[in-house]
Length: 110
Image (tube, rainbow, N blue to C red):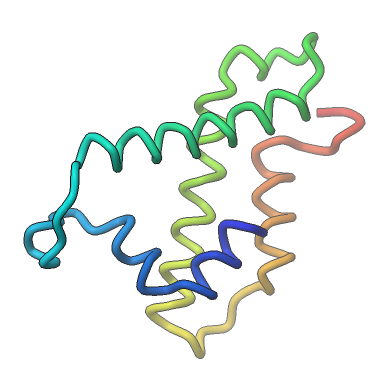
């Protein structure tokens, strides 16, 4: 939910984070620093998912793919909602729940 909340509460910052070309956006800064921050955020997501999975869970070996799938789903949802605010879509909570269940299954069974 934090990802969606951030995108909604700070849409300009969110847009700048994902700007493909900073120069085109009139921004200055160190692109390497942007990558470091992005890597740290992704690492946080990987660690969160790892803590969700039991060590015996076979999916634990591919937690980076799980994290990428969840992050891509959240990013797509945020962008679709921004581009088409009137579109019929699940609530934010439903989206998060659906993504978690699709990628991670139920907490008890995986």
